[in-house]
Length: 326
Length: 206
Ligand code: SF4
Ligand code: SF4
Image (cartoon, rainbow over all chains, first blue to last red; front, side, top):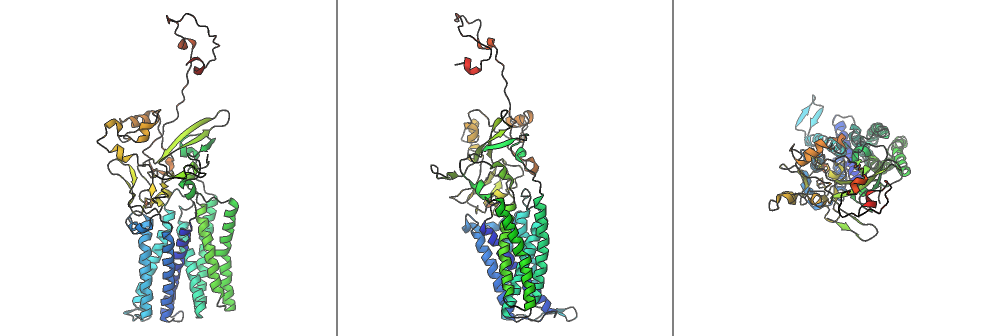
């Protein structure tokens, strides 16, 4: 497939935004049960604003993918059958919840209305919003992943790994950002967020490598014989029905050499996994306020490469019909 | 439909039907196969449920798969979900286009019945295209599919295309001298051509 930058930015930006929200609420949960020190309201308010900005940025990027962005609202119609439609509904829902979560914290509407667990777990409005937000975040990860994983003849994508990768890589990126944000503020949550970021990154490493291994040995079910229905081993295309390029040659091919693909793969395997982990560990050892920021930035660049490769590695069966321009 | 740079170096545009060419076998025993490719109007079209706007739909009454150009947002997702690569984005109107089976012709009751067919079927000079109802077991197309071994493309995806392809037929012809000569032709005085028995049709007909 052709890696479109609109979709690369959409998925990486909302992934980081979703992960950051998960990180904020994880922080809130841990401080509610007094496992980490409590943070001021501004920490959550500004954090939510940051998460919201990433979600809005992703949404904005997605508009560049559409031929007719002015009609984008119509895309909410077919949620019963289309994962794309579901994503279009869940993304604004998540934005709304993140917005409210930030506003409630900022306004200090955090009086608990019920206390659970023998006085150890006070539940306030932000807690409820946070729980809802976590559900919506997961729903959004699943919707985004299923857009790709549900197309069964894109065999490289048609696997649970696709969804796992979106979940773990987005979460990793968001927790990295939370660590960077904490480092910038100089609070004591850097190690906490950093640890979770490393765990999510390692999980992502597991599922992403598993999908890479799966895809290198994938056996494509379609071939030229089934494509044109002639049972003969020696079939060569002589003309694809036009003398230059077409939508079919632009949308479904990456037009890059195998060397470039290999390079991008090495690049993301290095930038997404070992380098940020090393930087987080180093930051922990040196108590550096800047290294977590570098770790997030490096991993984000790596994720752009990862997403590029994700598209490029998928072979669409229609490509069988477009081997030869003449 | 778009036709960009038709006379320049890089002509491109939107096609409903592309006629491709394949070479089967290795020299000298090769065959050239011309292969027209358009939307196959699948019975179970994977391109329809993925469309977020409902612009892609399958007509209840006749099963034709269509795009509502007024609803389409040009997200291209349906083209990813068609294994045959027959949907093409119109680069000017920025909406998805594909073969409509000439829906306006085939449903136009002001046309004489014989003309209620897709334009390509009417135009084909060798009658290579047949058109009819695949659900009617007695229709011309059903009979052809059944009796001449019609097959579907990429059956592995369970799309169940309505359009079928018929296997190539090889025509062998043995021409004897008597077939070419009307031995009892009263107008023939004498035949001055010397035949060697290796002539082809082109050598002896005019
Ligand atoms: S051939 Fe492609 S576009 Fe046409 S109905 Fe089937 S899946 Fe849809
Ligand atoms: S390009 Fe148009 S027809 Fe295709 S899925 Fe998107 S909205 Fe539907």
